[in-house]
Image (cartoon, one colour):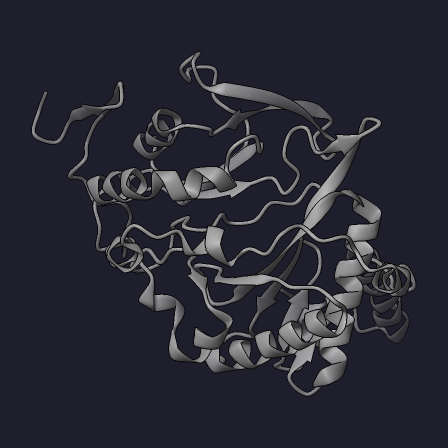
Length: 329
C-alpha cells in the first residue's frame, strides 16, 4: 500500500493524506483517526438507528446520503424505510460497529445523523419516541452567550415540568437539549410535549427566545426549534461537522455552558478533552414518562411547519392583493 493507504479492522483506507475539505485544516487521516478513537462513544448513539451521513468529495459541495450505495460491502447491516416525500423505499445503513464506521470515514462521511427512532422502538406496529429534543438556533451573527442564556430558560422549563435533560453543542452555532423518554411515548404526544416545552421556555423571557418558525418573524431572538421528532434526525454526540476547523457535537455540563464556545471542541481537540470518559453517557438522565399536562398543552399549539405553510400562503395572497407580488429572493 502507498503511504496514504492502509487497512484497519478489515477496511481498506485510501487517500488518507488528502485534505478533508476546504477550510478543514485537517486530512482524511485526521477524520479516520478521530472516529477510530471515539468509536466506543459515538457508536451507542448510532446503533440500530437508520443513518444519514453528510459526505464531502474533493472539489464538490457536501451532500447528504441516506440510501446506502449498491456497491457498499454486504456485511453492513441495513434496514428499509418508506420515504413518503419521494414515494420509495430507502435502504439505510445501521452503523453498529467500528468496521462500518471506518468504512463510512473512508467514504468521506464527515457528519453522522441517526434517526431519532431506533429499530424496535414500537408498540403494536406504531413507532414510539425515545427522546424529546429542543434545538437552540441563534440568529446570524449573535454571540454564543445568547444561546447559553436561552439554554438556562429551557433547563428551568424542564425542571418546572418535572423533567431532566442533557445538553451538547450542535457542532455548529447552537445547542441540543435531549430528554430521554420511556418507550411508551407516542410520537404525536412527544411532538406536542416538545412544542409545549419550547413555549414554556419562551414565556420565561420572550425578549430572548422565540418559537416563531418563520425566520423573518424571529426578531433577532434564539429559535427554540421543536421539530426534531418522529422521522427527523439529529447530529449525533461526537459527530464532526463540515465547517471550518471541523468542530464536533460535544457534551457539556449545564453549569459549564458559560465557560465554553462551540469552537473549543474540534476534530483535533476532542479526543484529548475526553480522555477515557464518555460525558454524554454520563450526562443523560434515565428515561422519563411525559407529563400529562405538558402533552395536553402541546396539543393546543399548532404544528410549526403546518402553521408556517398556511401563514406563507396567507402572506402570498396579501401581497398579490396589494399588487406587491412575491418578493425576490
